[in-house]
Image (cartoon, rainbow, N blue to C red):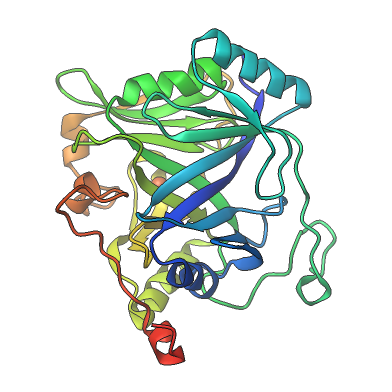
Length: 334
Ligand code: FE
């Protein structure tokens, strides 16, 4: 375990970039079942029903799909100062900014691959308006009776040219610990899963075969149950949302999953990982070999080719998989 483990409390929120703001917000509210809390020009603030902070995702209009700043909450104001100092001492860029999405003063930096990260401690706890007030006081918001009704923003999976360098950045400077990895026959690390908490993973790095940098593989949202994943597949089928793969169960981390493409082109995972907690303080890094990975996912479904090639922004000359939801066309918004 790294000595700074515990200074990062958890994954906070992510900025999802889209060339079609209305369509991506439609996907988030009508398919994922998130709640839009505010609109600020070209950005929409959305939340899952069980995230305690005000914002889970900032959907922002941009020329290309992708991921913007990912917010990580520190465990204390002192931990925020300590991590900022450690990053600067290690030669990484960093600047202080006012926070976004209900967060306070934020230290903005980048991982070695160029993905923007914002560290903050001060945040705004969500207060539900009357029509979204929950029945129990220990729940931030009533469950929406709409779409998948995702419970929590669960993890971010980044594409990166050098997986090991980026994973070590999180381990050495942000106090993450690595729980599982894929190591190829030639010895290089093709993917690594890291956590700041007792969840088995919060951030993942996957090798980008295109040689590009700063790209997104997927954002993932946790559902209450495995059955919700099956229902999500049916909802996507009805609404014309492209399904990439699943429902199925990952071998790595054993997460039950469905991967779909939102209208902006970003890959979104619906996941049910709640059976997996890492309680051992001396958890050994689990290494999956190339032959083991060639066996496919937990129940034998092979990993499909697009999983290794599609990321956002899309590589030049490749399909960015954008679609216009039929529901918006019927409303006259197309
Ligand atoms: Fe995932």
